[in-house]
Image 1 (cartoon, helix red, strand yellow):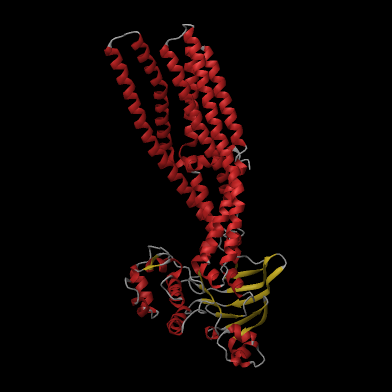
Image 2 (tube, helix red, strand yellow):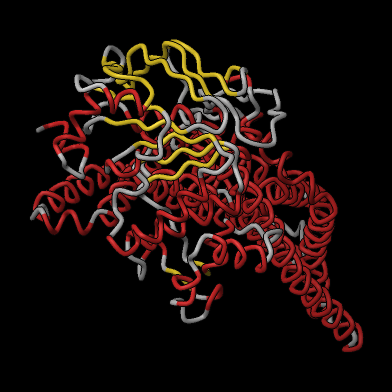
Length: 585
């Protein structure tokens, strides 16, 4: 993958522009360091020639002190440059990480379904970390070291044109050789980064499913997949590393040739009496100094080939567009809102319909209960109402406006989506309830808890709102996690609530607590309840039953109860609490 040079520059400019002062300061420091590197060999040459000519000790002492002072200043500048470049690099990469995370969050669910969490983490963190040196000092180092090379060659021409020509040819050949080796390396590093991302994606997925893997006895299969991933990764990494070692070995060989040229030309000119012994040392020192910027440029080219792979992968991620296009319209209603679906159909895979021609209408403040066995399309319907997906055909209306025309920010503000899988963070109860929104005060949280009758549940936390919860809900039962999710809804105070089997994992005690909360939740709100238990739809005004993605029954709950031929009536007559069991029976 040949990453265009303008793409590097574009990325550099975007994230270094806000740090213009630091970049200028770094350039100034490195420029001063280059000047000192050019001056120091001249001081040493003077010292050697003065000593061989028997000049006074005072002159030698002054020369030595100037040299030591310049060397000390050079070291101080190097320390400051390291600090500033690290600061620039971390600031730029953190800004890039933030942009990538924000971009990933904005992408639709189809992206997250097709990319493993570990793969996304590898791109957001692994690839961005690989760009650290690229941001911190790549362009500045290349420019300053280029200036150093040119400065050394000019000074060598000043000493003798034969020295200048010889070492100019050496420098040009060295740079050309290293560039040719680097140019063929980017593709191999791209493949290495991609394979690395897949490997860590696999690791993240399997670690997250450790409980299921152990309970099903799939450890052997997982290890087989693990070794297969390793075997795929090894040859790709070997090829990438081979290029790295080839560049390293080439650099050593080139430096050796440079030293031979310096000694050969310097010795020849000294033997002919054309230069002093101090100048011979000057030529050798400049050749050594010439090798250092070439080595530095080689290192930067090595980082560039790694950065090229990372830049390509980061740019690929940033270029991904969400299939959910944001709307612009506002919802003016402050209370319950109306929701309507007209002939909506949807499929995750081409030709495999999940929902087929589904229609319903939920007036303001009313509740729709949705029943159906697993795979009937209930959860898909809920996700479309929350606009995590758009229907393939048909339209959804909210307050008479097409859902896809309503601003996503406005929709999220007015909608609460509660599933049976509650996501908890390794943070305090307060932060888990408010989603880290510091504008929600403790008084408001406590008032909400007491208002819906959860004070006893709240009092069970040892440190109250400051109690730390584990990520994934460790320390809380499934029922307690659902209670926490319900409190989140109350704090958000939405106009439209989607409960996707949110009561399916409640134990009897928690069920009693949730009943009062649910009654309170439905006041002056429009709600759709994807039901797993029949008792949860007793509050519904209308009932919709799905089978294989199609509506097989839809109507007023009271009327369906009186109709002995209705599917809903038969479900209740079977007397089973679980909807799945009732439908199958």
